[in-house]
Image (cartoon, rainbow, N blue to C red; front, side):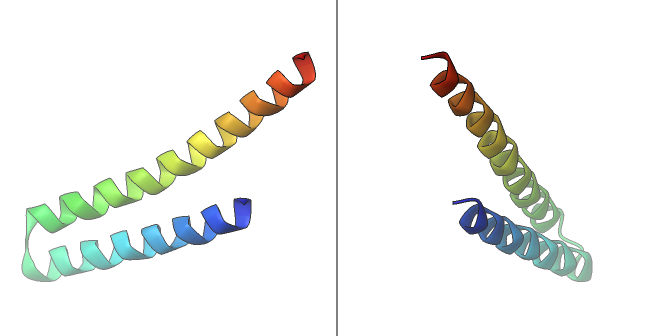
Length: 63
């Protein structure tokens, strides 16, 4: 499952970089904001995945 999430994360980061390049070319703030939000979503998805993995392994060891 980690490989699928990592591939999806790399795709999100590539898309955010593309949005930011377009924003720089066209001088549009909205595209820059969209690229930043996509990059933050990719980072948050990894954080949540690792936190839930640790939480689930802890809950399995307790019961």
